[in-house]
Length: 99
Image (cartoon, rainbow, N blue to C red; front, side, top):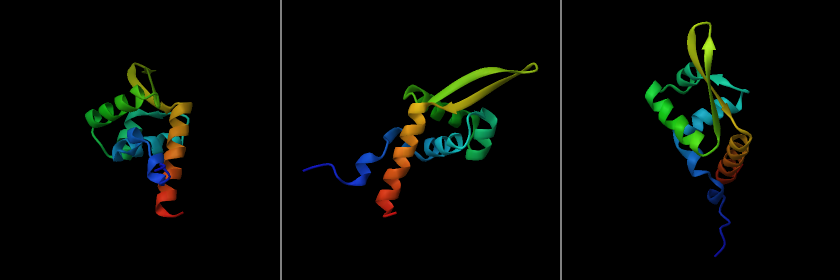
């Protein structure tokens, strides 16, 4: 039996709803501030931190820390691998939905 059903193209890392939402938010920009992503995805700091750590471990998200004035900031960005994985995951979802 061959793995021809489009579900086999789903990425288990991105498939979780919060991680999918984070990837979708980051796919629309070069980078985004942590607080912007948190507010857009509507999760707490701790939930976002945990999900970003999973995406970062998979090589899908790059985390950059720095300062704006004296205030610490964290920026998130999809890596090239992350963008490719997100694009493939969306294609698999469209194929499953029949689009």
